[in-house]
Image (tube, rainbow, N blue to C red; front, side, top):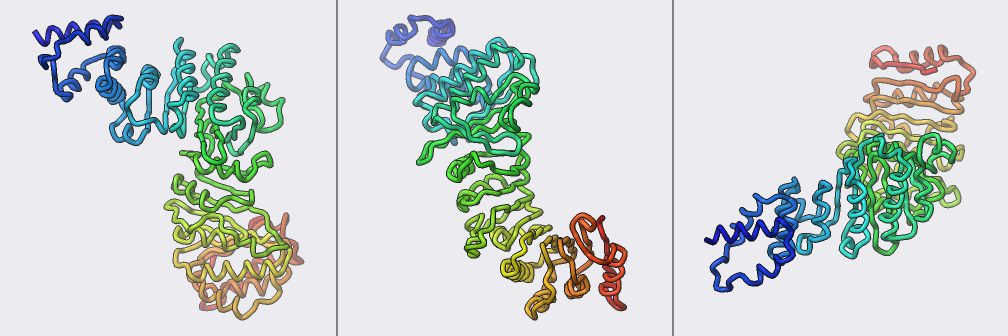
Amino acid sequence: MHLQRLHQLFARLSAGSRHTSVRVAQLPEDGRLTLPMELWDALFTHCTDDTLLNLAVVCRPFNERCILTLLWLNGVSASDIAEGHYAVHPPVLPAFSRALYIPPPKNIICDLPITSDLPRHLAVLSGFACSPGAATLDSLALQFPQGHEWLYDASNQDLLRRTITSIAGSVVKEVIILVAKNFIRLPVQKLGEFFVRDEKSAKRYPLLYAFALPSLNSLTFHFHRTSSPSTVIVINDVEVVNIESVPDEVVPHHLNAALAHVVLPHLTSLTISMDSIDPTVMRAFLLRHPQVTHITDERIYSFESPESDFTPLISPPIELPNLQQVTTRNAALLIDTAPSKPRKITIDWGHPIVEVFNRDFDSVLTYLSQCETKTHLEFSTWSLPRTLADRHVALAKQLRCVDTVQLSSASFEDPELCLRWMGLFPALEEVSFCGWRKVIRIKENPDDLLRIARSILLSPGGKNIILGVEV
């Protein structure tokens, strides 16, 4: 009898009967239909998605258990639910508007197949992102089939623009866009103009200030709601493998806000050219991106305040498990990533100021003298010193990590002095000179330089050092 009445109850709920709540209220209160929640959970697993959504309106326990069951049956693990991470399919989206008692969403990922229901799915996502329940939402990622005909239709493009603007504007009136390799700051009112109908239209705009909607395959919104509210939109994150520059349109506090929350799963190379980056924010950003292999510090020198050149980029120092190369103008970034021991270190002493060069020269040599991992040292400079102090000679003899040196200079007036200095490196195996005809000005031709290098570095009893000149 009990199972028969349960079957009738489920049938009514599945049909969406308006009398469901009345029928439930009229059930006997003497405990005859009381079941342990574990048994209800077992019953729920046999229900369809629509049935679970209907059952979720019965009462609080049903709401909690039915929504959780719905998510589990659609591939969301219990651990992800506990942390607020939800990877959902479009049919599950209505659950979020009825989910009153599950852990609040922090990150949502949603694949959006191109079907006739897509406008409704976009409306649900937009409504949820703008609802009070989204106050805990840190990110919303949307995946689209790339180049689908749906994205070429003018009315569909308008719908997508409105959806993007609505979601992005749910937090602030300005957004930061990360597309390919650059940050761009736009008012939310201009966001619709940023997305144009095709590549031909995009080319009419200045570089990076328009994006063709048919090229869209993913959108990720990162919401920052604290002291400096901002919304960061990452377009096609699979293309963001390198952040090369930061244009003037993004001021430091906007960039810090973006870096504090943005996640770029395919990022491998990071170049920072803006001053005033918060080193603690940069450290947290890199902790979320252990896959980074190259870091370049292109911040501008302040010759009036030399001590500012050593402002940390990362604080406190961090170890990056996959770091292979560091490019910098001084030892600051090397010290910040000291535990990582990059294989290749590129030093750009591209300034003619002797005092700055000498200071950087000393700091980098001191850093290298304390390393043990084999290191490829590549450096370019405006001019090499004509004389070397005793401390430079002493430090050269301690560079047991440097096995390869690559050198270029705008003024290479005394190659013999430099070669004799490099000949002091105890682990040196290879030396090369680059940019010969384009960069280096010298009386001798490349063959003469090679002859001088051989006579110094390949002396009798010395190591078999590989020499090369790249023209």
